[in-house]
Image 1 (cartoon, rainbow, N blue to C red):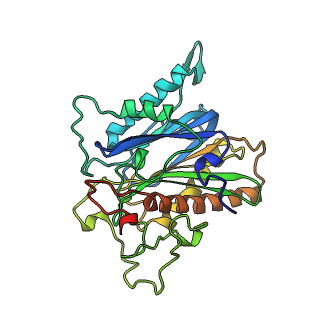
Image 2: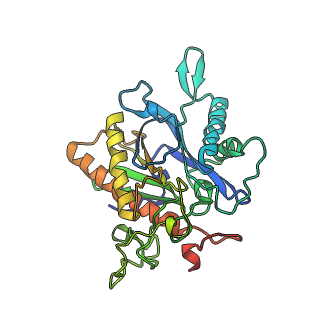
Length: 333
């Protein structure tokens, strides 16, 4: 297993990613656009999710594919971003055919970034619909990570969060990619250090090359959360996409999403809390032209966990220090 040429989710053939960022708002939107409709599924393990159109992703439901996926800041207000993406796709003639009509299928998930110091006095309507439309227009094989898109205003317990992405070329011939907006209640780093919990999976010093701390801090097992700064509610959430070029059924895609949550557990301590809406979408573009054998699917699931763990660390590592930050970035410490 090694990273793809871009070390981004767009190493999976058939995908583009676009960001729209508003630094005054300290929020933004990220969209994953499928060149052709892709098989999709979702798994929610956090206790405070915010979603749109996720029920249709269950294996027993009718619609098999999606046109795009949206990750957004803004809490429930950010769900408007999917409407902007849907509008742009409709203009392009994309969507699920129903008689003479086409309905773009755009599931979405949000994170809570309202209390991060940004100006949220937007008037009657929140800006996320237009941010979604802009993110779609910006979609490309190359995109920025860190304090952009859905990761713009993200925070963790110890450092700023951000948008992270990685990829893996598996020995079985398939490609995996992960994209994640890290806004966890917990921490991506060990104790009071700059070392990432994801360190055992790091490739080519992609998030600093520090490894695990030695000696291991005595207090590392004590969970560090945003609750240590103030009483907190559902002000968090890590939302992500795991993608592959393997041909998967919806049921297999759901299993891949479940496996990718193991990457959350490897990269964040604690994860999947009652105050996180932790969610993973899975996408199968099928561009490899083949379905995995049983032993290949095991490798896909293991790779989904490690690729996601790396992406989470990169989201924190790549966050940029900006004027008015309410938390220190990893890079600034």
